[in-house]
Amino acid sequence: MRPTKAKIHLYNLKHNLEILKEKAEGRTFLSVIKADAYGHGALKSLEYLYDQGERHFGVATFDEALELRRAKEDIFILVLGGVDPSNYPLGAKYNIRLPIFDPASLEAYLAAEEKGPVHIKIDTGMHRVGFLPEEFKANIEKIKSIQPEGIYTHIARADEENKSSALEQIARFNDVLDFCEKEELGFTFIHYANSATILSLDLGRTNMVRGGIALYGLSPDGKSEFGLKPLMTLHSKILSVREIPEGEGVSYGHTFVAKVPTRVGTLPLGYADGYKRQMSRKVRVYVAGDYAPQIGNITMDQTMIDLTGTKAELYDEVELMGSHVACEELAEAAGTINYEIVTTLGKRVDREYLYEEGK
Image 1 (spheres, rainbow, N blue to C red):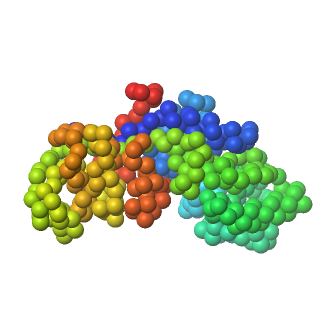
Image 2: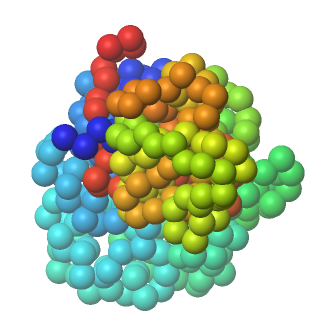
Image 3: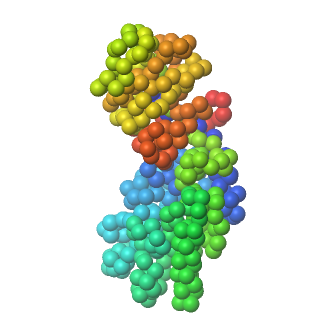
């Protein structure tokens, strides 16, 4: 088997869940396991969270929702992203909560023969999908007629130190809630809190929160300390070691040229596995008790590291992400965020699930 694997420390999921639920202060907790549970494995994460007593789950697409429904018949599933209107009858059939997110989706839902539970999405400033507040108010009679189960919005800048934009969005959402009260329209679920909001903002009039990236132990802003523990670590093995003389280049384009005799190790993973090419020559790995810099261009299937001065030997295990090399370190090198590092880890990377610490 290919010796490149992501170890998923599921026991940390329980730890992070406890932190987020304490912040939620008794509100219904929706575990977001979209994008294959942020690259950690949706079904494995579902099973673990289910065993912890969790029953409310959120996804981004209808196909993700169907995968969860096939696994568990008794869980609450909410699709948070926009959906094709043709899915409304199937949503009803499989008891999957779908969003109504603009006047067109409202009309499509009204025309559907089968109607399941829905949540109304309000656009308070993210400007992806959702009723603008004035659109919502203009369509209030139709919205009242469908008796929506929930109403929600999404906060665009809750992960920033300056919370003024987030607070403006919450104020707009509260204005919509005030209007709903005047119209005598109530909801079972009211929610706007993503991970960043749960951890750093007042949850106001909500009675549900949506735990996403923080559930998997990564900070929404990539830097704050909330006591979270990452689930995913990334490992491989040295499959080749060679000595090259001064003046020799490594990998495509010879972007690395040895200034001294250099000991080069080759790892069996590359950008096709999600170990991004733009990280080339900017990252390091941890092996044999020391750091080794990555050298040359990261290729599709292989990555080279400089073992000069280390005690590393052929077939030694290498940590590419973990307690010595943080996910955020890779994200910075790639010019991206920690979300992308874990969600784009490729399917060629085997996942090994650990249920107890130290095993």
